[in-house]
Structure formats: structure tokens, C-alpha cells
Length: 445
Image (cartoon, rainbow, N blue to C red; front, side, top):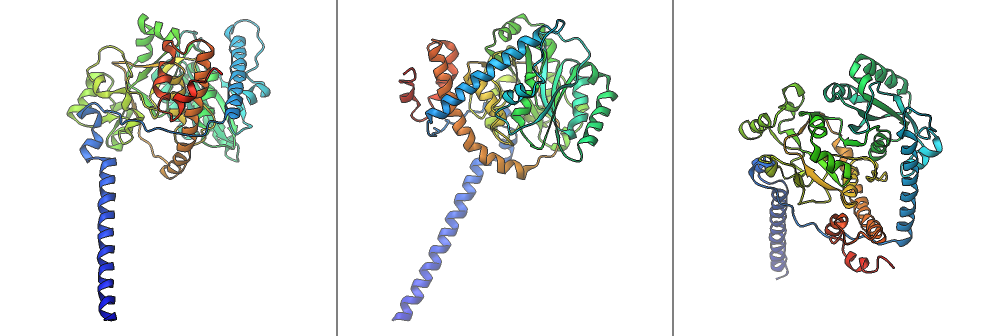
């Protein structure tokens, strides 16, 4: 009898383990298919249909009153220092006290970074006269991207503010020699590019580098651009000659989105000379040749708010309406009065999204330009590093968004702007914070 029960119990356990394994495999397969989607749909999302955003999930982190007040004070002090710097630089022809190279100023300006860093603004300074009302490309460059920067200078033919990071190690002098060679080989580099050196031992401080490029830009407007993108259209000329768009930029409450694309086959994205340079040619490669699609199509939240399906037929700038906090477009905006990138984001993941989230929360709307576009130039990615750092920054970004909601809410209330249009973006986004509706009732107390 005991042997009988033992055999049957063993048989039942085998059946249960087999059933569990089948259920697990089915579940994992379903989840994988849900995330990736069918191969064709995954690679052609912007063509098939408008990409609808999933409902954003609530996020929650403890509201630490003391740390938030300290953060507000530091931001206020930073703004004062930045305003002083800009005032001293405004009259470039007259005598002024240049505090931009002062190590105390720099330590305060970049107090959120790891530091200390050895920062050399205008290590090379563009020789061509720069007008205040122009658009500087604000970009960050590592030593392996010097040729790409040189190509960008020749293509753009306008002011560029480039923050270049160099590791403070035994290769430093070799890298500086390589930079010097690149700079002097191309006359367009001398004419158009301001180079600001950042020398330290800290890799991937992307937001600190972005702040450096923005801080030392010499025009009223900047385009925050990743160096690996090719400028397919002359958006600078199109914008500067358009009175309606320029008025929006001058007011400081509009950022212009340049739609970004990439090739489905990485091998097609190496030769920029073959890239389309008109919207009609781009549409041919998107619809007929099926070679191009939205940038980072595998991470739809990064760019889908641009609404590519709408852009394909657009003839006028249109408002980004389906915003999500992972949105990270390439934008042109007014330098003065716009938020700075939070320097706590060190490494891959959420660093650029955090910049653009704060710009949006501060009351700046995103408008997509209908005829201009950029295309990503293929290169290799250090994916293992990216995955580790993205996991960490997911948690940092959750806390960051909540802090911003509280801080800007206080600011709008104190300035009697809570019921004005400037707070619309904040109210729409921050209502997704669990418990925020209750907190906002007592924000002025």
C-alpha cells in the first residue's frame, strides 16, 4: 500500500512540475511578445498608425520637506550666479569682469556634479562674430567623436558650443593633440566652434557636460543636440527667417522639436552623404523603401509624443499634446530663463529625459516643426553599461519628478501663477503623483 501511494504521489508531482513549466513558458512568451510586438510592427510603428501612449502609472516617493527646501535654496543661488555671469558677458566689446573662469564660480555652478573638475571655457573660441539672436548647437563630445564634431561644423555653418570631456590620465596629452589637429585641419571649426574643456576622472557626467555647453553658449537660443545626429535640413535659416516662430522663441515659453529618425538596418546609417535632405525624399525612404523610421523605435516613449504619423502630413508647427515623462526630443529653446539639467544623473538612463521634463514642467510647451528633421548616424553602444545604469536611474528619476512637482508648484503659487497657463503642464503631469492632489491643497502654508 505504501509503495502504491508513493508511486502515485511521485507521478502527480511530475505532472505538477510539468504543468508549472508549461505555464511559465507560456507566460514569458506572452510577456515577450507584448513588449516587443510583431517584428514588422516593432520596426514600423510610426508608419502604421498614430502611437497612443499608455496610461502613465502613478509614482510615489517620500516627500522629504527639509531636502526639498534645501534643493530650492540651491537652485535660487545658482540662478543668481548664472544671471551675474550672463550680465558680465552681455557686452562683449566693453570691459567686464569675467567670472566664468573663476574656480569658486565654477564649483558653485556645477555643485551638483561629482567634481572637482578642471573646466576651461573657450579653450578654442570661434573667430566669426556671433549675434545674440542666433541659434547655437549645444552639444557634448568625447574624444572618439572629434571627426563628427568637425563634420557638424561644416554642415551647420553656425555657432556651436561644444563641451569636450577628457579623462585626466596618461592619455590626456595625446587626446589634446588630437583635438588640436582636428580643430586646425578644418577652417569651419575655427570659424564656428567654441570648445570648452572638462578635464577630470569622472566619466559620463552627461548633464554636467550639457550645462557647460549651455552656460558658455554665446547666443540667445540653443539646440540641445547629441553629436551623432546629422542635420538634414537648414532649420536654423528656416527659424530665423520666420517672424511667427521667432516671436514664440523670444517669449521663452516655447521649445521647437526637430523630429529624429534612424535607419532600420544599422549598416545604412554610416554614410551621411546618402541621407535624405528634403521631407519628400525622407518620405520615400520611410514609406516606399521602408529603410527609415522614428528614432529609438524600440523605446516608443522616448520619441512617440512627437506624433510622427501627424508629422508626415503636417504643414504647420503643432503642439505636442500626448506628453509622457520619458519623452526626450531634440529641441531649440531660449537659453535665458530655461531650467538647467539636473547633475545627479551620472551615466546612462533618464539624464536627457530629466532635462526635458523640467523644461516642460516649468511651463515651456513643445511645438514640432513640420519640415525639418535629423537622422542618427550609426555607431556602437556599450549596452552592458547602459543596462546597469538605466536600472539605477529609474529610481532616481522617480524621486526627481516628485521633487520638481512640489518645487514648481510652490513657485507658481508664490508668483500667483497657479491658475495661469504657465502651470498647465505641471498640473497635467503632477496629478499622476500619488498623493499630490492632497499635498497641493496646503502648498501655500
